[in-house]
Structures are given as structure tokens and as C-alpha cells.
Image (cartoon, rainbow, N blue to C red; front, side, top):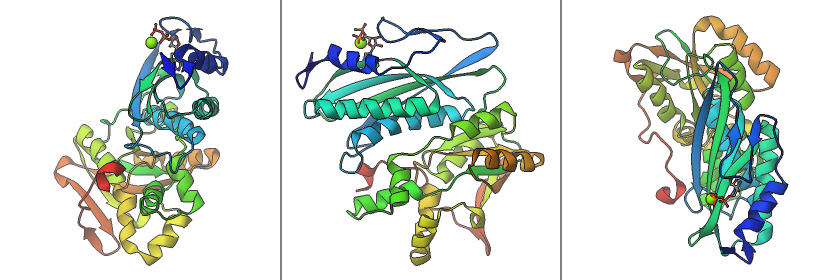
Amino acid sequence: MKLNGRSEFQIIDFIRSRCRLSPELLQGIGDDCAVAGIPEGHVLLTTTDLLAEGIHFDQRWSDLFTLGRKSVSVNVSDLAAMGARPRFLFLSLAIPETLQTEDIEQFISGFMDACESYGAVLAGGDTCASKSGLVVSVTAQGITPESAWIPRSGAREGDAVYVTGTLGDSALALRHLLAAEKPDPFLLRRHIDPEARSEIGAKLAAAAVPTAMVDVSDGLIGDFEHILEESETGGEIDLTRLPLSKGFQRELADTPGLIELALTGGEDYELLFAAPPEHETEIARMGREIGTPISRIGKIHSAGFGLKLFDHKGEVPLPHRSGYKHFSETT
Ligand code: ADP
Ligand code: MG
């Protein structure tokens, strides 16, 4: 197969030449399968995400290096949501004719850069041609002690609800990009190059603090609903406690309706978790140590309570749209 003058094998050779080896990986790229050992008493967690050009990304506002980084981060975020650090990644690419060799190399460099920063190694993948845009599929695997992974289903009445970082930045940047406006650089970075909360997710899980956890990829409300449904509980969020960045707050001051982006916008890649209230000081300490703010934003109730939002005046109706819609569907 020829890909813009390069054979599939030249591309794989290039990828392989950029790969770091890992002692845990008995066989990486170059055989029919990757082979890795799993220490006794540990479990393997596997997640996969597909990014299709025109649906999940747009080369008008993300260069290929940054896209390579993001394709790693969104997968690492899913592992973080279960309390695992990434170990092995698999990268499958469908490459269109229009993509230049340098573009592919840029993508791989960004991918490797993010692998390095999260401590993961690329262990294999697949490469083929595409007739309609770039398609990137990444699979990520993590290994944790058998008892240390965090499900969505463990929240209990009386737990407090926490979220890392800030909400709505990515969605606000995307709104500007779709309107052909230039977003604030901080907001843009949050959209095109999000950082997965790998360290804090693993630390919280190792300390057995969260009873339930998800990453906020589809919007706070939608992802909170996932915890409530899986845990068979109700819950509340206090809107006055939502963590918002300075850039977001500046625009919110002029346009109060933007608050919906912090609730339903999506692609925040923050961690949302429930934990018994007695862990409050420990959670704050972990956040400080890692340099990631963690805010208490709500409470878990019994199932009959449903999902409610409150502000300083009392209960407010749920926003109409909960859950992220890909940008091609919103335009
Ligand atoms: P097969 O035909 O047996 O599927 P391939 O020729 O597709 O093998 O792949 C050869 C080796 O290169 C395998 O180890 C595979 O995991 C690896 N590989 C192929 N494409 C990629 C990629 N995009 N990223 C990382 N590894 C890759
Ligand atoms: Mg193959």
C-alpha cells in the first residue's frame, strides 16, 4: 500500500524509530502482537477512542503535533477516570492522500511527546490509507492493583462530589472557533491540547478515596448522570461552587448564558468523583501537592432525589441540552 509516496512499512519504521522501549513490554512493534507481563494481583484496564477528521477535530485550528498529543490525552483521561496510569498505547491510523509526510511525522512526534509525559509506551497499531480524512484510533492500557480501580457505580448517599480543574473552557473556545473568532489562548489550549488528570486520578485511587469517578468528556451534567445512574443514587450540584477559569469568568460577566457551557459543554477532561466527606482535607492536600485544584461542588442523595441544581436563590431547572454534541452536529 502506498501512502502519499511512502509505503505503510516506511511509516511504521518511522514510528518504530521514535518508540521508547519498556522492560514490561516483552515484544512491542515488529511482531504480530504486542506481549506484556502483568504482575500478580494486578488487573489490566483497556480503553479506546476514535477521532475522525471533521467530527472530532479540525486541522484549521489544531496542528498535527497538537492533535497527536490530544489523541493520547483523551485516552489517558479515561484511564485516569478509573484511577490507572497509562502503560501501553496502540495507534491505528487511516491516512488520506492529502496528508504530507511531514504532517504524519508531526503527528507522530506529538503522539510520542504526550506518551513520554504520561509515562506510556507505544506498543503497536495498524496503518492504512483513507479516502475521507484522517482517522485516528488509539487504545490505551493501564495496570493497577486488583482492588485499586474506581468504577462509576460506587457513589453512596452522603458522599460529597468533587471536580478537578475548571469547567467550560474547551467548549467556550470551540464556540469562538465555530464563529470564526479567535479564542483567548488559554481557552484554545484547553480545547486543542487538554491535559489528562492522570496523576491525581491515580493518587486518589491508590488512597481509596473516590467511591465513584468519571472523566468529564460529555459535559458535567451528562457525566454526573452517569455516576448517578450506575450508582443508583440521586445528587445535587451547587452552581455557585463551579470552578471557572479567569478567561471563562471574564466572558461570563458579559454573557451570563455561557454558564451552560460549564454544565453541558464537554471535552473538559477533568475528573468528577464522589467521596465520603471525611476525606475532605486529604483531597485538598492531594490537589495542592499535585498542583491541580479540586472543588467540592455537590452531594450524593438517595435515588428518589433525582438530579437537582441549586444556585444562591434556590433550585434552578436543568439545562436543556446535557451531553456533548460533536461540532458537525451543532453547526
Ligand atoms: P500485520 O499485517 O501482522 O497486522 P502490520 O504490518 O500491520 O502487521 O504491523 C507490523 C507491526 O507494526 C505490528 O507490530 C504493528 O503493531 C505495528 N504497527 C503498525 N502500524 C502501527 C502504528 N500506526 N503505530 C504503531 N505500531 C504500528
Ligand atoms: Mg496490521
